[in-house]
Length: 112
Length: 114
Image (cartoon, rainbow over all chains, first blue to last red):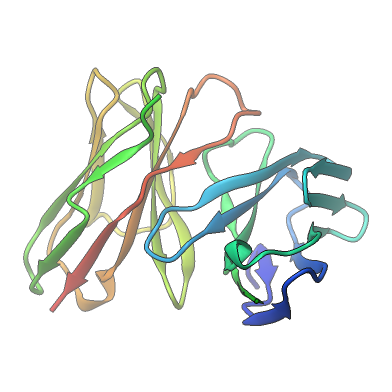
């Protein structure tokens, strides 16, 4: 079993829709949770970075972590065609910031 | 600030050869991590260097090695290339001194092994 599981998609939604991306993780030591966005032929770009449980909002993006169920979510409001990319969830324990474990990524397409 | 840069961007090699990839971190960042990204396995951690020393290591064979120079630039070497080594190799940098910080990725080097 992978430590971070993510549905690979692809997921296609119309412009303006609310997008929900989800991951589960198995390692209770994970304390930090991230969402990265990766455009084709580019490196991953950090979108959201949260610690422990709770919500964090940044513009149209909201990250949610539920440590009791080991569930990580990213919500995108008012989705735009420019949001079309692969979204990677990731996590690491407190003691190893560099040893990030990534999900496999969900490919998202926003239809104009 | 300039971002993380990686060279070369694309590389074609044949089985059995070796390859060296280079990464220049964001100015002031002392930690450099390397990842392999493939469609089947996703992003997998290779190793991390901090102040010229390997600080963390993933589960890759000894054919994969790296080093870091005093200016924090890093190189990754893969010897005796196999077809399965075809992948996007990503480098990420961070300041390196705090467990709460995160990493910033370069554009990657796409390696094709024939």
